[in-house]
Image (cartoon, rainbow, N blue to C red; front, side, top):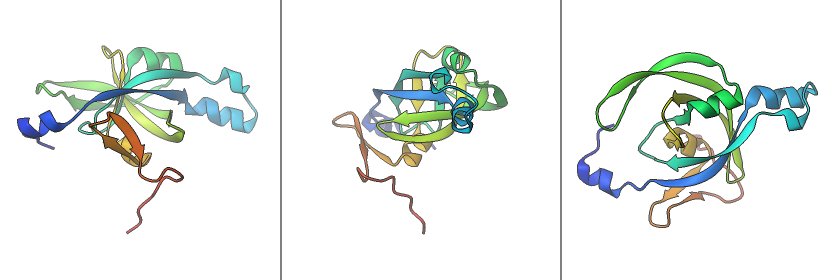
Length: 147
């Protein structure tokens, strides 16, 4: 997606805290193979950026969660640079009481996560740029549009 400079100025980025966990650990708890207290999970800061596509996690977070690299992707930065980065799967995300499982691109030099449009769409959040907050489209349910 290509945006003009004027469109970029309208986009607001803000930080929210959210929880990430190793979904394999959570599955092991459901099977009775792991104590709930042993699930590798962290509460981290994430920059909400609806102009970004995916979830991006700092390398140190991925290492703490024990998530294995499953593939590599080419990433493009806002300044036009490109790089090859690892991708991990099985990232359990909980954000404002909503949860789902995602894959994430791993960024070695990031301190915070990046929460992109795929996460926002799946968890059914609208971005309120003026108030710098996430707003559930329906506070009681995640709405899944089917035709």
